[in-house]
Image (cartoon, rainbow, N blue to C red; front, side):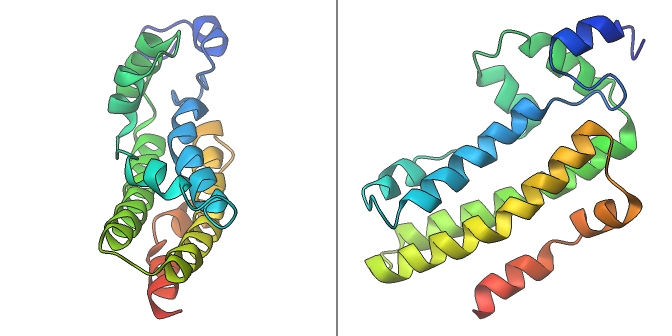
Length: 161
């Protein structure tokens, strides 16, 4: 039992009983990535992306209609500290990239530049979401976690390219 939570309840709630984290949180980022990818074919998706709201783990579950959100939040509070901190640091960086992208698009980029930025950001975020999933699932290696804590290189590459 983690933090008084039954591992069976955690499993039924799609919370990893070892880490105390739920992959449902990654839907928040996958939605933004999907909107960015769709922008080339459906430019009006930019409006949906501009409406994307940054949310941390607890905010995501608090505002969601996820059936087991109370279990997910309680498990997060009792989660393995290294996993929780690693996930939080990685998702804060992903959020920063998305907020920067959103703000740049609000500043009136040309449609071509907005699509190019959207494609580059989506491509850069996908491996970071995969690393976040590995952290949540307890399968991240030390190399994965070290890389997850340093996605600044991806941000730098986006800004340089």
